[in-house]
Each structure stands twice: as structure tokens, then as C-alpha cells.
Image (cartoon, rainbow, N blue to C red):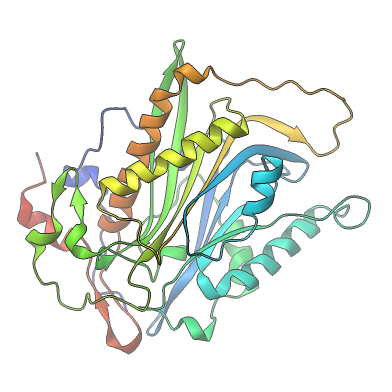
Length: 357
């Protein structure tokens, strides 16, 4: 049961992260062609859902994108990362959900890909579904496995350039730093040779301890003091999934390098990357498409000069940090299973004079 709802972003609370300018929407969908869809399941003890990230508007299996993944800490159950690392490509949407929903999500995504590609498993090879998860069992009846295949398909069908943040989709039952977590996003504009490019991040934030929370460089956790109803859940170390999208022409090695920089943004919010936490990053570029039925023996793809990557690294760190703050500020105070209530960061920010600073 939702107690409150917050619609303001971190920036609207005076929390402007970093130095680089955001894109027009300050969302991952500022990268042209990227879309995000949610299905939110919120009824008393059930606080869960699905979020789908569609990397481009075409047939992703037939026109794959260059991609990389990075495991910051591997206490997680994600699917599909091995083939991304081996082949350097992404060929399906990325589905986010709760830990025990990954099998259902994989079945639904595979069926979606089969419906759109009659050649899969017939005249060509199989498909690599990419599913990422966090454990929402503190607020959600996770054992009930309430996510269905229809929910996954609906999330894909709902995908749009405009999407909600906070306690929505896969983020419905997530907690971060002893407060409400969820879905957050941000983007940055990167200038290279006077050409404007965009990098965006989407996070599923479900990590951290309240005492470690840091907001725009201010160690806020200890100042908050005791917050009712925010004792650690069944996975106290938590997890975070980070999706990075860009229209910069990057090879898979360079995407791996920027994926590793996402940890900087997470750390700036206070996370220590504990032993039982699952932090996964999936990064892709929309600049080039890899044709499934490629007949050329030699394929040439553009990539930027490695010496010009520093601004991209900064963009990743800033996007990831701001996306985490958006997930928390825009999340609703939520009561879930066993009457547990977890409060939104927005409920406390007014006390610390951030607005207007």
C-alpha cells in the first residue's frame, strides 16, 4: 500500500550532480531509439514488477548492438551476460525484475523473440535473453512468484521514451540505504570534436546501509538518525543493476571500460560493494548495428580515440550517481508484506535545506 507519492526529481530538490549538462529529459531515453516500459504490481503484500529496456526500435536480433557487461560483485542471478562478454553484442531487450522472477522473465522474452523472428531455432541459431534482477523480498511476497509472462510482455509493449521513476516496474519493492529504492535514470551530453553525443543510465537501486548514504558529497546517513520501519531486509547487502546506453561509437572493449566506471557513481552515494551484494552493469552503443545475416568477410566499425574517453568516464559516473538519487527521491513511501513500511528519501530532504541551494 502506497503512503505517499513523490514526483520531483533529485534536481528539483536542488540535488544537481556533477559538472556535465544533462540531456533534454535527463533520462536514458535521451539516447535516440532507447525506450523503457514498466508493469507495476502493487497490492498489499505484493510489491514487485517488471521493467523492460528496448535498445532500439528495430529488430534487435537481426540488427544487434555492440555491448559489454561488467560484474562489480557477483552475488546475483542475472542471465545472458556470458554471451554478451564472448560475442560483444546485445540481441534482445533487457528485462529487470525480482530475483525469483528471472525464469518467468526469460521464458517470456524468449517467446517474444520467437514471435518476431521465425528463423530462431529453425534456420539459424538460438537467442540470448538478457535478464537482470534484485531481491525485493523485504517488501514483496517474493515466494509467491507473482510476476507472469503477461507482465513481461506488457512491460515491453509499454516501452516509451517517457517513463516513470521510483517505485515502479522492477523497482516497486526495492529498498536502498534503509529507505525506498527503485528505478532511476539520468543522462549527460558529451561533446567530441564539436559533435554532441548522449550517454544515459538506468538503475534498479536496491543496495546500501542507511548510515552510509551520501547525497551530493554530504554524508547524510548519520544525520537522518533512526528511521522507523527501515530495518535491514533478508538481503542486507542489497544489489544494483545499471544499464548504460550511448550513441557514441564505441567498441565492446571501450564499452567494458565505461561499464567499470559505473562503480564510481554507485560509490559516491555511499555503497561499499559488500560480499553479499549483486552489482551488474550492461552497456551498449546504438552507433553501429551488427547484422545477423552479414555476408561480408571483413566488417569495419567506427570507434572513438581511447585518449578521448575521460569525458565519457565522467558522464558515466555522474549519470549513475544521479540515477540512484532519482530512484530514491522519486520513490513512494511503501508498506508491503508483514506491514513493513519503508520511507522515501524525499520525506527527509526538506529538513536539510537542499531545495533552492
